[in-house]
Image (cartoon, rainbow, N blue to C red):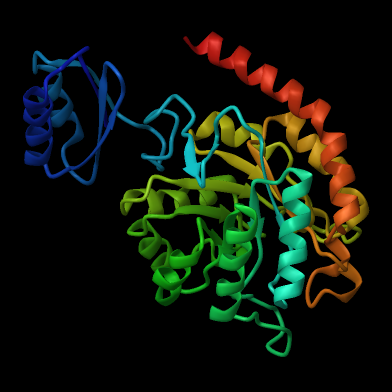
Length: 346
């Protein structure tokens, strides 16, 4: 249920409503705006009786049942898009965010070159895997803790925020010491123990869509994180598995506006995994801006031909700089559209 309090309700009045909701067996989640507080009630109980009781309270403006199975991440719960602050930037706000860097951290020289190059081109966050889930047990699995330390060194040198993957609930605290955003890879989208652990983590989380997962399943996974206490979730469309073999995956580009209709969470696009081909990344990146994504996460390597993983879908630093330059006119149009949307919402 969503309960909208009347304008300028006092803390005592809000707490009275929350106590009444708890009496019916529901858990409380509140959003405080400048003038109005919205309370969400989630759990198992007599919805009809609770709604009737709450609506009768004088400090309540309205109380409605949430129809979506994902409660906290739905537009019914929060109409305005969430803005997630990461290292001085707001994802979901009026800035188009670009995360860029190599698939995996391979050496100090490699990650420092990548960090300096993507920072110069205009990226806001550095991506790089310290822990790598690989299909083959014989492939490079990442530098683990040493890789995290190198990412931290790159952040100190460039000021870039860090996004890196966490693969196990046992590693959440360790990765959170070094990263600004914890990435959940496609293979772990429904690792519920990991999602619950991230719900208790103070860092932002980027949740990648599973390669065979529906939009609803992605949102239900995001709900796990938010319902367990962490509202700072970013969704990532990275392509899904279809019968097509020319590209690594099939980019479900319409998932971006679909998610923008269904959820208040920011949505970014990964053109590298969606295509698997560096020649297609700039075009798909332009499409991501045009269709309303909040940002991109792109694989960039100083020497893609020598990359330990995903070299074929990695841009080199010159190609990334060129792509960022070409994106600027599209980003300017994107910013104007955001201003128009904000004015229309008032």
